[in-house]
Image 1 (cartoon, rainbow, N blue to C red):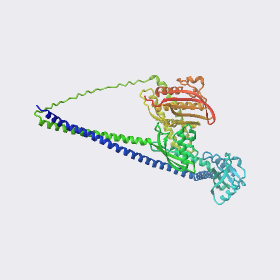
Image 2: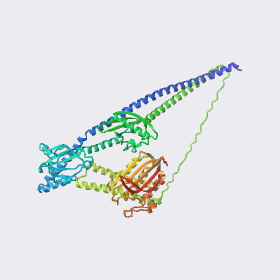
Image 3: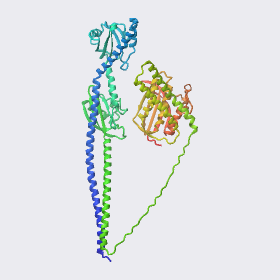
Image 4: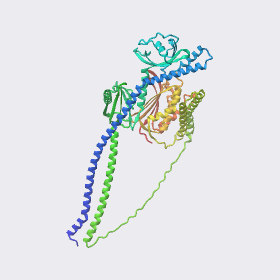
Length: 639
């Protein structure tokens, strides 16, 4: 029989190693956590400084490149204008010389008329540019811009600086066959009657003692160059969310990714103190030169919440522009969070390793303590080993899917396919006929041929896709996916833009940068139906043909509104417009199923609402009336 001291000694030998290992493991884990957390905080601060420094250098480089491109492009304006004018005059001279050589058997008067008639309709530089012909004695032979001057002598005509233009031109061309020439002229549409620099190019036409020329106001061409520069900057993207913004010295937003800000003055946002303050800071600072700014951003393309933004701005003095770009610190914190997740996983792995080591040491010391106590005890406590057997139960489940076809909808589908195919087939016929005619006339260019083939291919792809869309129309397994409003609009316009241009129908779009859940192909089908209905109503109109599309988010709802100026839907048939087979286009072979199927798709498949209103509105200071079709969808709808 063991004494009390012996029992206490045995317990001490048994359990002391286990307690020591446990306490040691806890100490190591706590110490490691403190050490690793200190390392992470150091890395976090270093990462933040490095991220901000690198991104500052990056956005500064991007802005500098944009400013360099802007300055270089604008500084070459006069050179580009001269190249453009020279090209047009040389082309006109070649046409005149070709007519002269090919009609040697005709009278001089007839040949002159042929040359004048050939050059009169030529226009360039957005139709501002035109050609003129003078005899060397100052008589005007052709003036496509001001026909009232034809037949008159301008030998003694002086510009606003007192220069006898025709006399000086004769003297210059007496020593040269062609020349550039600058003069100052009063713009006919300029109410201020100021002298404006005009650049021209002239070339002698020796058979008739003529010179052919043209001219362009430099400031008009500068406007085109500025528009081209802004278009380039507007389309410039980098990184994940990077974009360029441009303000002028007056505070007007010339380029911005947010269309609600672009083409507006920051002073218009006086009700929004934050937007007003940011706009004023950017403009006031930008006028002074270049600088970094930091503020709470009001527009992050991928974020709903406000986030800090660092921007770099630089002015372009000769244009009085301020160009800038920036980055959001959200991206920095995402990177820090990712690093923290890696750190936490690494720490968890370390804890697991420590627990495994502690467990192994515990087991080792346990056996050692048992072995030592067995030497001290007279009687050894035997061990019983138990082996547990695991029984595995395997269960199998089978899912039976029932497929039911709807034969009753077959007739509707066929009718709708015919309705959907009619316009694309007509579009293909128009494109191919146009290519054939231009080929016969010898004016078909490779670029135009490739574009026409691409258009036909896209239309054929759409025709093929229509069959799949309607075949899947009644299937219950259609899936929602995330879509961008701009992408959906682009796909619709890819199929429709050509025919709309052919009928002089102008599309006015206002598409917000929004992402939502929908069945993309079916929504595109609905939009095409609405656009085609609007087009059919506009074809008989003699006035300006307009279709407006707005896509925006409000109260977690997506609204798509399509409006035309065709006069609206008569009140006596508004309630019937969505009924199957009801149509107002019998003479145009309408099936009456397009709007019915569109509402079916929106309500049953997209889980939305579809309704019609008539609306009177103003556009470009003119009043119109038209039908407004509105689609209302849940932004996060998932089936």
